[in-house]
Length: 89
Image 1 (spheres, rainbow, N blue to C red):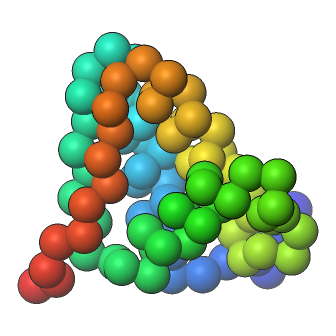
Image 2: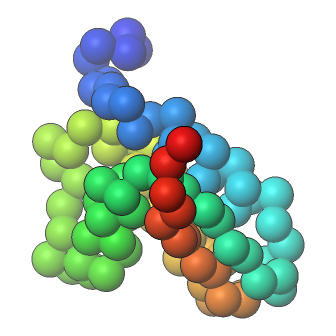
């Protein structure tokens, strides 16, 4: 699938970084992820806390957002995970 077909945004690399960090952190280890993109944290929070009300249909980068949500849900079952906004450069 071409990138244009799957959707892309400037959030895609940051979402990939979150997924990688979640996968590399043991389930029983507290995780603190620092991010300087407030909009991205709002997007992730919306989908994680939305439960059955949220849908990824039509969402930009739905594929990697789904991976992020799945990894967060797995991680939070084992230990606390915090995504924290920090000031940019």
